[in-house]
Length: 101
Image 1 (tube, rainbow, N blue to C red):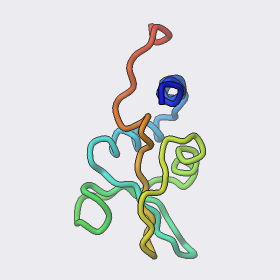
Image 2: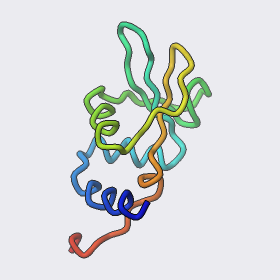
Image 3: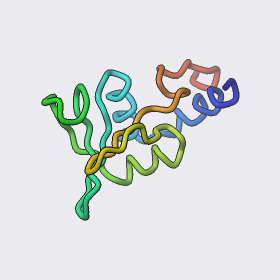
């Protein structure tokens, strides 16, 4: 786990603004979901999918990059929606390192 956390600290400096926004929203209780259809799309929803909270679209490239980097992982699959969660190393804000100065 220490290695995973260390890697997360390093990677946090390489997230795009859009990726950082998704991570911040998820840390504050928003859920990232994917509609699994031919025209599938990602979105963030306050409080979780289908709970009536505010929504924001998320570009597929942003979500796919977060998944590829190990920032998010599938949490729940209930057709036609797949919900994602932050991986353990990304659930809390990253500590500043000496490289941040």
